[in-house]
Length: 187
Image (cartoon, rainbow, N blue to C red):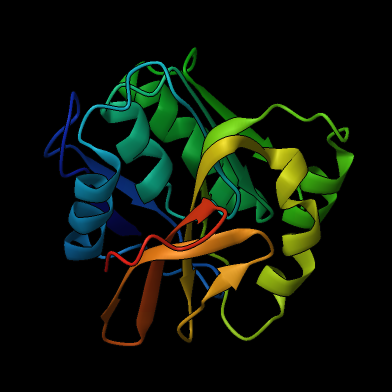
């Protein structure tokens, strides 16, 4: 069993366990810290979608910081089961919805006027073309002023109409905060 530690909010320092799975690599603590500095530490009232949940590091971190609703989508049955077990462990079943599904099928199943999430975490397995396949359905997932966070194997300028406004690199991970419209020039 692997583990990940929540770094902020209500469940700070809690350790969550998850099984091995192909392509599963939790977002490093340092990158999560940067991301939540960019987003603001308090996500109260926001709705978040963690489309390739894996260890759940991003989704649990968002819920720990007050997100009202977090939907975590995971294709691997054992990993999805561990996400459900961790949600029970934290007593967070009402704020966390764990969906065992393929990310593209889940995203495509939402209507054109989808749920309009405030924050979308997109951290798919590398070199599989997931970002390109999901870019066309992003408008049905995100609110017009919603924020997109993407981890990828290379630097990205945009995902469709969402433009990189902040970015960084940690080892092999390129991470990006994107907003709808033109980049504002901050890095």
